[in-house]
Length: 204
Image 1 (cartoon, rainbow, N blue to C red):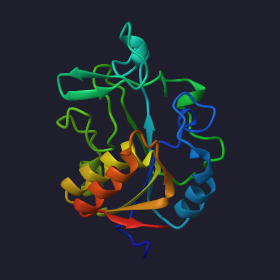
Image 2: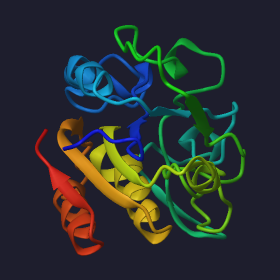
Image 3: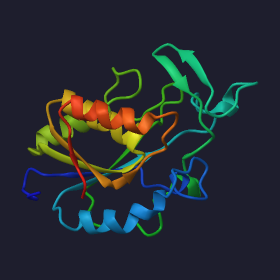
Image 4: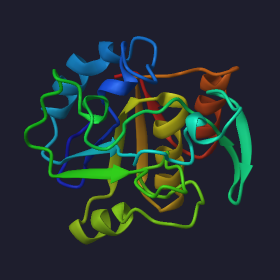
């Protein structure tokens, strides 16, 4: 892939809570960190996303008496999976992985900070209406080609890729530099949905 002036690498949620030992660990999530560092070094422009939940977030199972992690509930914007408390603002779990080395990242985009709305996508909150501002930032800077990597393939990477395509960007997912949670076949469904939406899937 040519790393041109309009290319920007979007690194999704490489945070302690999504790595082994974390509150919502993606299997082998920490394995990608060296590859993320190598990939990022090839890009002039890099953006990091960071899950950044307040305590008591509505998506936490602990906020719903009698519910367990991975139960689902209905909320105003549809079905919501309930998660273990994770990536709570200011905690070690919310910090980037200690071996992530991307000093030239130009933007850290925090998401999930609205207590009543979960946020998977780098572009839109889960109500599919509330923008994060990323699309405007990219357009204003003339950045249009958007490779993605990070965690997790079948949730935050997936929704960022789909919303990036809907916003008109040329999106690719570097699947070898991602890891998935794979809840009940969610990884295969995610890859199929990205292909259907016109997202380019790259091995590395």
